[in-house]
Length: 226
Image (cartoon, rainbow, N blue to C red; front, side, top):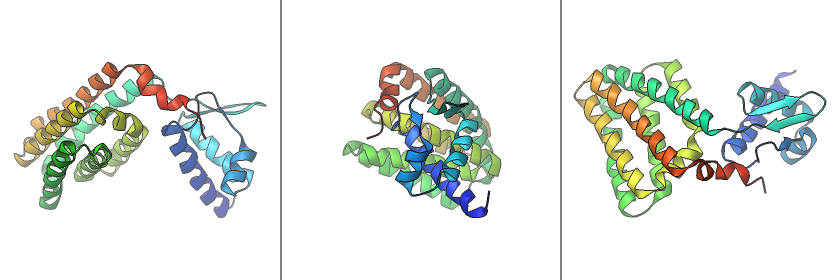
């Protein structure tokens, strides 16, 4: 495969991956190479490459002589990812205690204040965006390229679910307070406290998601692509 097709394949991969994670395809829906290629204005070769990559990520299943089909996430998959994220996020916060900069501390403080403002004004979309930025800064502050990459992937997988969770004011308030405890430990240079606060934050997110019920969590995956 030449470099141009590989680059196109990456673009197609990102597009389909995003649509699957956002629930724009039904679980079990066939991903037709020709149709996707026509929609994106590319040949079938980069589409085929993208589908193979998606199969490696577990988002797509390719069945010989039948085609490629959306796998999606089960509740167990979601719980597994959150549990792995809790462990890694705790490690991330622990490392960040000795690596975080003054500018990053100030940025995290600003996010807490802005989140409070948007909670009071019911701007749930902004709350989700700020949550994403908070975690991105924390991951970067760890100073570990591999840890940051893994956590960014996990966060991306669960972005739609996180958005659903934070759409409830009670959870948004709790989440912001949990962020505050993480920041407090970082400012006090308390590695154990930062690790525990970060892991607890994710554990509480899991509890909230479990309380919502699978039907509400998975609802977006069954809507299909318009």
